[in-house]
Length: 342
Image 1 (cartoon, rainbow, N blue to C red):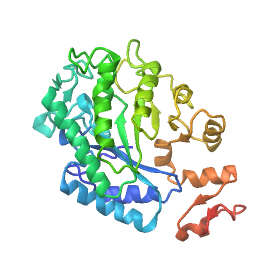
Image 2: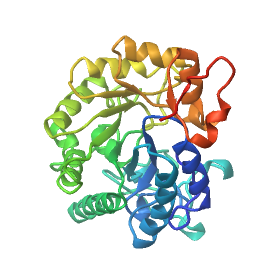
Image 3: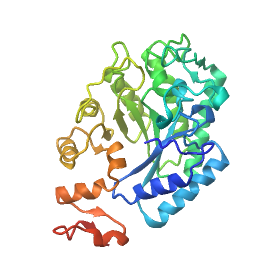
Image 4: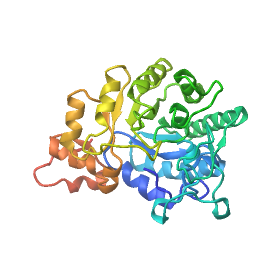
């Protein structure tokens, strides 16, 4: 979950507190929030970034603290917001931040704004595409040096790579637009470039929106084709979310509402699939895995509300969970074997 708490892209004390807390949650993997590869790729001026030495040094401090007290694997989500960049942070309002107030002119596959009243984005030319691809590679190299265990390439929620995938936002007439093959071209080029740079023993996964929830947009059938292309290229897993590309989306929100997308894709691939979306109870998560609908379950808002959710799940399901020895005395009555005390 984006924290909108960075300074010029650099992690702050908030990230030390926030990620340090989550590193002691007992989860199987901690994924750092969407981290922009260039300043103009940030969702907001307060977004985390990994484009400079200063960004790298700040994040290294946070990771050092995590490594001192936790063995949790840490991944990072590398991203570019495209036409959804330069927005106000959520608790201060909505809409685009103008250049006069610290914002910037945004970039996109085509000059189509997210909202009709937003400023028109600048359509990326070949030079711009190369610049962004190189920036993803440079950020991946920084993540490697930091000892990050995995990368999740963000191609969901209406951000730049998703904008290339969807015919609603990509109306180019060159090799990067039109056919599905062309619309997939740039996201796949970015994946290939990162995979050729990031340590070969470390996994790279991709987060996608399984559907735009808009007729004529990106959908699960196209997602399956993209999945097969990613599988062929050595992708390690697929994290299936949905929506975010268009304000016209009609999302049937409810418990497990995105799980059917993950299930459909899982039937067509050997890649491990992560399901997400209003999965709040341990029994829900357990059923998703046990029934084979997905291989892993991710929580975002649920973990912000209860950063010890894995402890709660282990207690309810009769399992064990990793916990720091400083917390071993916290086992509730009747759960004396809840924590692994190795």
